[in-house]
Amino acid sequence: MTYWIHIARSIDRVTLHRDRCSEVPSHSTSSDFWEGGWFDYPDKERALRAMEQAGTNAQRHCPLCKP
Ligand SMILES: [Zn+2]
Image 1 (cartoon, rainbow, N blue to C red):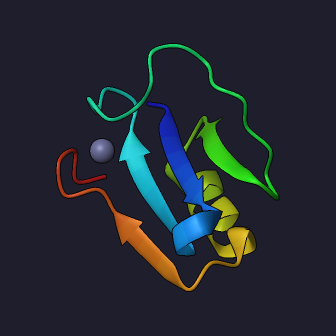
Image 2: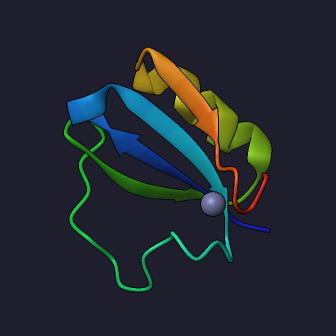
């Protein structure tokens, strides 16, 4: 299963999602790890590590898809 993280620098928050979450954009958007955006990972461990590395104050798990 693919996991997605959404880095939102403007609100200093990163959110973890599952592949099929309705909040995950179906079209790729411009993403830059230091600017923010959506990033996909092939497993949860890597996604969690990326969340740590994002360095935002808040780390959330999406309440919709409950990853
Ligand atoms: Zn979600």
